[in-house]
Amino acid sequence: MDTQNRTPRQHPVAVLGAGPVGLAAASHLLEQGLEPLVFEADDGPGSTFRDVAHVRLFSPWRYNIDDAARRLLADRAWTPPEPDALPTAGELVTQYLEPLAGHPALAERTRYTGRVVAVTREGMDKVKSADRAESAFVIRTRHRHGGPAEHRASAVVDTTGTWGQPNPLGANGLPVPGEDRFGARIAYGMPDVLGRERTTYSDARVLVVGAGHSAAGTLLALAELADAAPATDIHWAVRGAVPERLLGTNSTDDALPARGALGERLRALVDAGRLTLHPHFPVGALETDGRARMAVHHAADTRTAPIRGVDRIVAATGTRPDLSLLRELRVRLDPALESVPELAPLVDPNAHSCGTVPPHGYRELVQPEPGLYIAGAKSYGRAPTFLMMTGYEQARSIAAVLAGNTAAAEAVSLALPETGVCGGAATIPSTQPDRPGTTCCSGGA
Image (cartoon, rainbow, N blue to C red):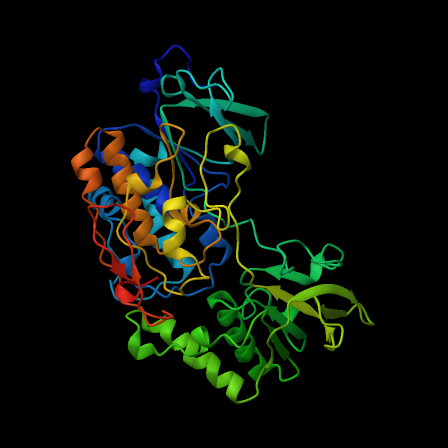
């Protein structure tokens, strides 16, 4: 446990999560002369990316490395990757996050295998109003080997993301009847169907549920698997209409060509009849369908025939933030997306499909709880279109304001790649009156 005889401002800044944005935040805090203390539940950095190590990213290296992290690594004889190469998630970990986390300045300030289970203020719950800013934060962790521990902090930057909190199959946001029962046959996210889980999916009837890029990537991998295992039968269920925003992507219109090509390749599979598309099919229930297979039923229309004989389901249904650890703090979130409120109208998938927001920093991320910032993918809540560069600029701005450098904190800027996946070019208003609006298609995800 940290010593308690310090004033609140003498404690380090707690950074929750050792992913790309968390380590970037720690790097920027060091540059600003502040003391970070990073908490990571896993035994190494980038656990999200290690879970999907087989997945190749859309964005090349030039968009994946934070500037402060690059400067920190410069004194370690680190060789930057080729800027235009597309890394896999695993390569992002081994070639960037592990060398960064291994730098002595960060290694001695990182605590692994301790999951943050709660954050509060010392001596008070969220009801008490007086003197909140003068009280230290208390970070309670639970370790894999050993009991709980508590640490004190002057400020908190929550970059815990949304990975590990998958949305269930139900279109209503709840698990469908039978989802728990068939849990061993359901994968959430992007399973490695061409690698370590190849035998699981070979010659199986597989249903992919979801209409985003994760679903598309899994469908393309299954199609490649079917070339070698022809009995592999691929089905794709989406709860709305045919996802033209995804299928209509043109790689020539997208500054991230790999993302644009994804839609083109998926369209070709659909047109060739290599998978069965089930539009307007929200999943309602799973039942046994002989030989331990599943019958997948429609949520509302009993006249729609179930999808029968399903061996495996891939739920590419998105993720949601874990809000439980902030329960004793004063937090303001968008009621629909569970994002930082100022970002909600800019990333709401109901309004547009573009994966960018205007450059923003600490002012948009500030919470009613003094000294608390939600950054990275968690700042987007349930919205799926987050780009690491956005998180890096958030981290830079937060570190600057915590160091008292307000001018630098407010001088936000971000050059994102142009996107070809927008559903229009409507103007998005700035969240601040002295900043101009931007168009949806002026940047990318």
